[in-house]
Length: 518
Image (tube, rainbow, N blue to C red; front, side, top):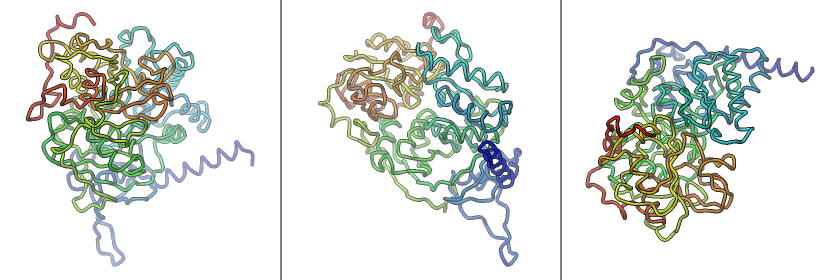
């Protein structure tokens, strides 16, 4: 058989299996299903008596729903229906090429309203190859009539692009594409960010993404789950970034390999949706298949205010007697600010133990540390201080950028606080230097410098130069380090409250006259 014929035959067989093993998923299930969802149907035993489905974790319940099954267990291989597929300018072109190669030049995607295309990585650069990638996205969108494409055509002035949003993971949530109980696949490892909304979200490669484009399905091995109980009163100086760096430092960068990291405990209710995203975002830095937090009223308030297309959703909860691969418990009241030293996210140390390490710059940005509340936290430190090293600010999205000029703290906008402190003016929203990028990328480290950063990875070369060193830290620690020029525990430069002051409650909306100039 000719190679081309072999491909067609194999693809046809795969599609046949796919259609055989995945029954339709009901779209009219109740929005809340507290004990079990999908609704547990009695299964007939060998003697004809009904048997109860085994207890499941949160991730297992979502995958069971998506597979059209009553129950699933770790290591089961199941065909899962995707609720959404996300891609961006780095992986989109390759995914589209594979899709056309395997399904045909004139093939159509399985659902044009469930494909989300968000350019964000290599945007504000003169590199012709990077710019060509966005053109390829645009061509595919026009061919397929994709509904959700957040385009950018004028790279000189991002505000001239009404559709451009910024970093995909934060934009997905802000634009209403994250919902409890759904399955999200994305061609980016930090797709797990969306697990904060009580959904299964994971990164996949271009080949798998091409298959999802054509079928809306993917063969998936059900991951075992790990439980992380976060309890106690959160100190005012502690942020979600400290929590996840603490966890990764404990279990290592391979400690959750192909496992679901489920976060729970009474402290979760103290966290905003942005802080919850920070927790789930870095599950991949521990090797996790996904990170996930059970949805609650904080989740539904956020989702219901944005839900694109007003799509109904179902809330799932783990069974009390569900089985976990491992369980960890933390008393957050006893934790201190931490950093991850070069060159690994699990190279954890207390920030105060690194006070003698002189740094060259600070970077506040990325899907992990470039959200509105991250900048509010940094501004809180910088209100009465000036920076002593270059401090780069990259808002994750357009909405975050606007917040810098419309939210006030102590009578000044966040942007004014940063400017008065001596920071470099905020850049256009994008991934920027988080992953290095072309040589002209804003804040890229083209020299072997030391940087304290709110990003998620600190491997050699991650932000540019292979000999540069990156200390991963919370916005509080990053801002404090900008003030001293050394890795600094934020308690050394700021007097925190005895009770926690959540960032989302600190800033207020400025009068229109304050942000006339941007």
